[in-house]
Length: 517
Ligand code: AMP
Image 1 (tube, rainbow, N blue to C red):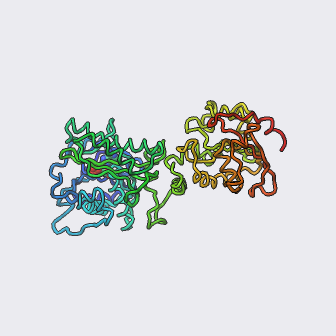
Image 2: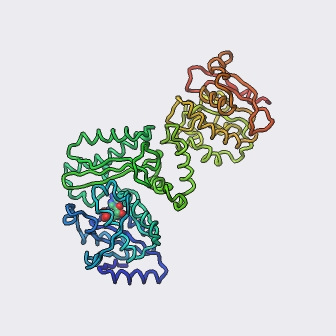
Image 3: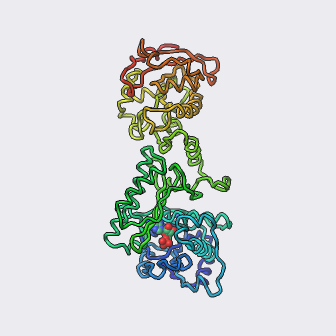
């Protein structure tokens, strides 16, 4: 198959009509040429998803302001054609300006308020030009699917809005940012960077990574994150920052907390070269695709029902939204904390067999040392827990025990505040219902104790014995309680020191636990 080079609108329309008559799916990848790996990643995705791929190359004058770099925008048609031929693209549409904007052309698309912020504020006609040319290309090619890069995040938001608002019969696919080895986002304009500017340019992605790292360690406050980024920029005088912001992925309005799905946007100038970059906040370990899903399935404020959310993302989002109060939202979806939803089904084929539920304050296990993932290598917490419960291994543990947490936010460590305990008790109440034959509950440490007393048993703070006093005599304590979810049945509750958060140790309770209640 050889790549077809198309210069006119008429020829493109007849090519596309021919493709449709064969009931083949058609992809469009709009570009301005001077192609690089970023563009090629879109092409590869298009080839995977569709039968026929058209790449358009058009440096669109309508999206450049009078003082911008339209004339000197990089152009390299021979190399582009070579790259697209080796990528086995079916057709390249490379029209002249007169073909796309013939004499008398006077209709433009106004994408509205969303096109007036960030890039739009810096480049007032930019998105009007982008939306107009994209709509025209869509109408000429009539693709089933069109591919865009996350690199131009605001553009993605605007195109998706265009498609939705004007009911365009095309599906938009967004592909992750392709970067250089040092993190710099690939861009056609990078070729104009001097060696020194090139080094300074890497600071953009480094600052985004820094913000991401801080968010992963529990710092969600946008002012703090931007201040950290600002410090990095200040150390590089070559870099003129146009804006750095953390925004809601749907409205592009600034947010106060960087939640999963929020987006950090940066734009800067290095001499005459303008660069943009962005990063989607997401739980640690999220793939680029997962990040995009998080950002792009955000319910639109006025279009809740129009969004087509994926259930798991949606539920994650709801959890995060609900958890705003608990401060440590960034890692709310850490797999270890999600054991109930993710691992329970796999590790516990029969929930009826569970006799003992263990509630850790905030069990010190992460994604790598979770016993549900890595049963052969218990960490210190688990080793001591097995000793306390009188089991030898995780295999033995899971025959009749299940482990959960009083607090779900991993960043809170062993200092858990009252609000967190109150909020997370909701989850605990739901979990209790999952184990209909539970006979005993083992409570580890003071925070789990306080949560259980206050928010599961509903006791007044003044009637709750201080934890150290309760455990003073024997190193553990027990009581018999009834919970509404278990009806008239008595449940024994054992209160112990936390295996790793406290200096004192409770005696082994295996014998007691295996005795009949
Ligand atoms: P452009 O030629 O700059 O207009 O880009 C054409 C398409 O390629 C747009 O959808 C861009 O978002 C996308 N693109 C540009 N650079 C990258 C990159 N580094 N990674 C992924 N996509 C990109």
